[in-house]
Amino acid sequence: MTVDFTRKDKFTPLERIGRLMAGEPIDRVAVIPFALSFSARLIGIDRGIYYREPERAFEAGLACMQAYPWTNASPTYAWADMGAWEFGGQIVWPDNGESAAPRSFGPVITQPVEVDSLPDPDPRAAGMMPLVDRFNAICREHGFPASLPNGTPTNHSMGIVGDATFLRWMIREPEAVHKLQRKVTNFLLKGAEITIGKYGAENCGALCALPMDSNLLMSPKAFEKFVKPYVQELLGYFLQKGVRSLLVHLCGNHAGNLVHWKDIPLPPRTIFSIGHEMDLEATGRSIGREHILGGNISTTILQAGTPDEVFADTVRCLKGGMEHEGGYILMPACELPPNTPFENMEAMAQAVYEHGYY
Amino acid sequence: MRDKEELFQGLSDAIVAMDEDETVRLAEAVIDDKIDPYEAIEKGLSHGMERVGRLFEEEEYFVPEILICSDAMYAGLEVLKPHIKAVGTDRTHRVVIGVIEGDTHDIGKNLVKIMLEASRFEVFDLGRDVPPVRFLEKAKEVEADLIAISTLMTTTMEDMGRVIKLLQEDGVRGKFQVMVGGGPISKRFADRIGADGYAVNAGAAAKLAKGLLGGEA
Image 1 (cartoon, one colour):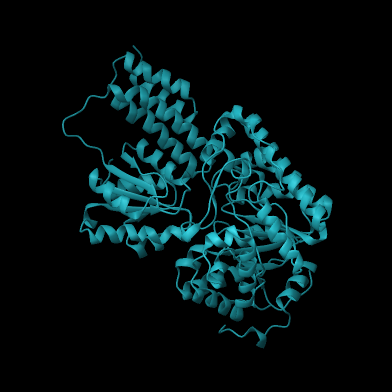
Image 2 (cartoon, chains in turn cyan, yellow):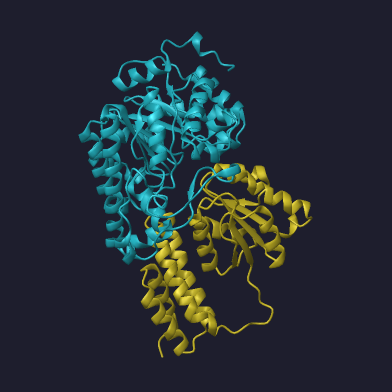
């Protein structure tokens, strides 16, 4: 590490995030690098191994904490393309760096009439869930929170029928969309119930990422009709059970959906991280001082930009985010690209050191 | 005999209204009335999809609406195309399109394909997860004018540049225009890898393709 934060920092990353969550003053912005398989490089393993073996993913997460002690990196295990595997389909692993993360092999069903015949999978055995549970067990052994089922029902539903089919059904087969979302929501609720029962709500956190619900794909009206009721139910359940740690990742452009989040039950100090398509200041105004803003360094710049470009984009984010009264966390606009050059991480650190103190 | 301009307008309106049955009915009327099917495609179906593209840019329509409109367009094309007489050496511009290797997200690519076909480009779709060399091979095979490459992933975007390098190594870079697009792609990135153009969305991609190839499809 070339940037020596100890010369200016008054708090450790853990103290800093704790104070931020409590709404107390802090010395500088907290940084969540949103690193998943980026960490695999730090221990020299392939992305396929990282995702197949949650024990190695945990080890990689610890290595990321060690490599970037100025951040709030922590072991994390998740991917976005879910649903097909859990409901009877197949998964393709990202072996030999062939893709960024596991992905569905193809849709499980293609006709509306088939929705009724979909199985009701057991969350203890279906798809990625046993792997997540293995990861959760290690996390709890080491004092980290367990993860509740991530994503929204839409992620799973699009995995089950394919994204284009799901989007067509929104207009042609709205009842089938609701049936599918209902089935998936039941599955996620059951999975959450098992995880909370095993580890306790106070030891669980949730990442609610919404890559498929964005206005790049669907209208705010479609979000309200086909997504919102199920997200309300899922996050309402988390809240009712006592889960207090929630990160909502608005992946892509959700500017038109923001108004609907006022009707979705959230714990205080929910973190809203946003994609590069959204504006930090405008989003901050919408979520209000009760919640924390996160984002949105361009992932394209992080991977393909020069260190100077990374520095400049980080400064843009700091200027846009640090004014938010509810508090701000510097984050990439999405998962840290697995191939991000290490010197670009240093450029981010330098920008935080020079411009990230209050 | 119905007024042909009214029929064209009806086709255009049916596309915008996402009315596949009405599109087919009017396309059949075009054939029954012995109206030039090529003109009906241009002034009816393509015109309708142009309006759809504008509605998409204005955020009145989103991806579900475009997909249903395009279903109507393709249904109309099914009726009209068999009746088009081959005209001399007329040749529409040819595009080879695909999602680069390692990426299977193809909604964006499919939308670009729809808008290109609506603009009367002949599109050769390589699908998703396409190795860079396949773009070169297919473009040479079909004597394409343009190669369009898409990706949603940062992990695969660099391979778009690999396609351009392969074209250079093969000595055919000058034969093909290359345009790129997708979630993480920017104009700056397109310039860096030596692409000829970058489009931010499907509507812009069709306009860019026309611009790169000198106006008309």
